[in-house]
Length: 294
Image (cartoon, rainbow, N blue to C red):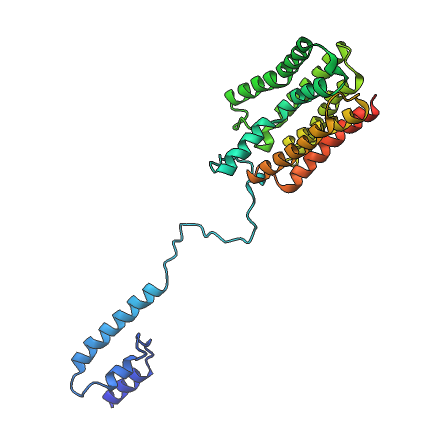
């Protein structure tokens, strides 16, 4: 009776099947009688194999490491981040970097001055006068802002001399606005035509709009600058007593404006709408100021 009771308890015991689908009862069933000791050893080996397989299938979870949950948030482009951008060494990247530096916003007042003294009534002035005015504009709008940016970089206020980080643009914007207003005052004192004085005022207004937008959103100052020159050329062709082939320069500048915007997009400094917004702000600021401020 005791042996039958032990057999019944063994039959009731549930054992997890091994890798081949056999249970402990199956292994006992296929063993010849009288080999209970051998059967017990074999069953113990099967149990060890089952435990090892289970451990390998279930990865261990380290309770000390935090579980990182994956999110379905879309990847943000480099233009929308706050980190300084890296340099693209590809051929198109080199071209885009060159265009971006040649069309940097600080040079727009200088280019505007050269075009004014080349295509308008002021082209009748002497070469020395034109050179002197251009040098003054260069000193006010390029040398001073560059010096300020160098000092800001020296004191750690800006991390990127190219000012690609949105939050680091406020002080340079303010400096450039003041420089544009100083240039307008200089032209006014030297009795330049009102429309050309207002060109620099329009540039300052565009810079102010960009500054306000920059607190919440990164707008393209490059696009604003080239669009402002485009508005100046249109105003010269209509009311500036054009003396040269203004239409040719207008076509050239349209291509330059498109190339500048494309370069900023290729380098991922801005998104499409940031470039479009820059075009709109720069063009409207200069055109409206020069057309209705006279």
